[in-house]
Image (cartoon, rainbow, N blue to C red):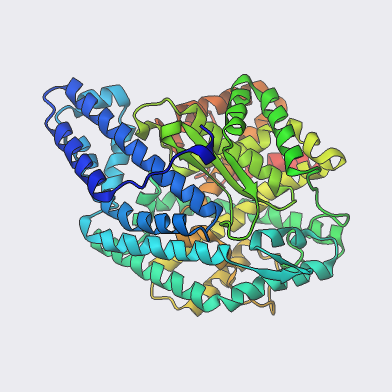
Length: 559
């Protein structure tokens, strides 16, 4: 079914709750393993349809945050989702306690039950009102960002539409564009501070009600960290500072020399080549036409996948006023349909979105028939392997997007993969400090960010520049507001994606086979088990990061 034609009916809370309670009683009352399996399937199918309605409504809200109907539906979901979580948690507890658990584990494996144990640590009935308020605050942030209207260059722009100006060869335009965007953030700085203040205090209160001193461990549970802990992530950050930051400094020194500046400031950060960065050629329609050709050439399965996505209008990538910022891939279980959301802006990022989000969507498409649904759900760092590795597997078809700028794209794409890692790691460390000391004032948080900039991005000058110089850049990162502790997942996955890139340079068949095998496991293996199965190095051993980074640097040095 085409996405615009998918019917939406608001799931009535009382009816849904009553049905879930009935299904719970049926599951608990099972007299045999067969009855237990049947009861669980009925529950899984029922809630899959409820989730599908919520998914459709969320997508349509993000497509136009000014749409009154879906704005109301989003508010409704923010209110009822935490209340439904109580019923879902009761089912999770029953799953763990059923006398037929041995039979279920024999059929479905043990990881589903490990994850269920983690889920039970994220919820108690007494935090329902807190979760409702958290949802409202997160929605308030996204709506504020989507509402931005910036007058620049004779037009009114969204924040996403300002991005191409940051890459303009004219330094005056780059500076003016950054200043215009930062002025918008500064004009809303008090509100941005207030939203985050409330979120930090609220999340800390939730953690205490769940029996924890700080929110950090709750954040890890929410992110389904099932194979590593805070100490392992700290080791990864150690490796980034030791091995990745010096490489990025070298890249950025070369960039400064290339564009003719003595040292980089935030105004120059996105500008890599004096003649301009690599940009995709043609219209969005041209991009999608070549994208279809690309996925048809990559494999028979990806051909089937891209046809399904296009025939069912499961993309929305054009920027417009009122559309939420960023990009994502959602999933609608009822129709076994992924959905890709993005904001094209005329930069190479448009192609990265087409490949990155398509990696997520392909993973959802591959796993669509796996049952139960819990086995389709992988943790976030695994999901980001799917997407980031896909960016590299599609390299052989980049000439169709970039023409004579393809070599420049390869160089900037590979370098940017490494350049991103310190930034993403900085976002992670920032959140660890914030939730360890939730009493921080806005000024103290900003000073913390500035200190972390010196540690992770010492090459980048921001002094005296409004917004950036005050240490407020973190306010642009929606994950900090909406999905705490998510961002390190991108960094961990980037290391694994670079391993796939390296093997794809010499043995593409083997690399693709390993990647496809990893996709096929879906949520049946942990992140650590997946990388072990693929024979890839653990990112939690600091010195492993050097070999991964060196392979990319060696390739770049030969260009």
